[in-house]
Image 1 (tube, rainbow, N blue to C red):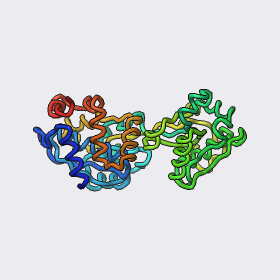
Image 2: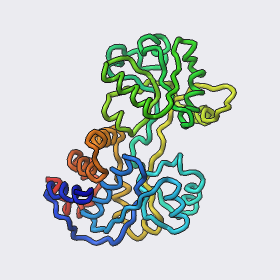
Image 3: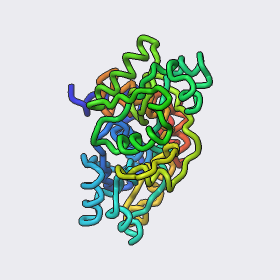
Image 4: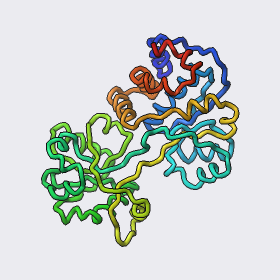
Length: 322
């Protein structure tokens, strides 16, 4: 049974006919090559088709190719999970030129980065919820900081924060992982054994959906310091927390004008990052497709997505909501 058949079968189990009573025409939507984007894309595809009568085509893409395609061809109509920090000057020019409209944040509060400890460690030793508490009690976190692999952007920031907080001077060894897989494995192994763990991670990710982790308070965020910490050769690194990375829904200006009702739907679509962690963790554990993960979300988060809809669309989707 292929993915489309599985998805259709899942929709039918929800009691919803695969036909809508409105007609918005054709819509093209970019699907990025990571799990959260697969969920966003397939949820939006379902809502647009069943609630608004659209004929949706999904375009596999990535950040730079999607922005380039809009610049050159004015398509796809929407990029529903655009990480602004990765989109570069090309996106800034499109936005400044009025060729695209930024509708809103698709992830709330955005892409999350930080230094984490397991919840059982935070519960046993609440002082570890702050970096000051960690520095004063290095043995309680195992005396090790799990760093990003070389070549990752977070590695540069961490390599500046490490001396800024003087981790090694406080008795914390820095272990730089060779890959994202070993970083993830270290967290999973420690959590399963209820052992100490302290290190960098980000969300949305399946791992933070599976394991209850607590972000260590690194103090206030300073935009100037954080910008400097992204430079490998910063001469005098200082401390700053990580900001939430803006992750937005973008449509072409033509689409926003042509389909204002659907654009309003997309403006409303916002996934709490913790909910997304849970959904993609389910997706990972069940080896599920993005379509199946979308059905999981639609089934378990009705109160969330029903608020995104117009009254007419909510009526068309009443079979699912009841």
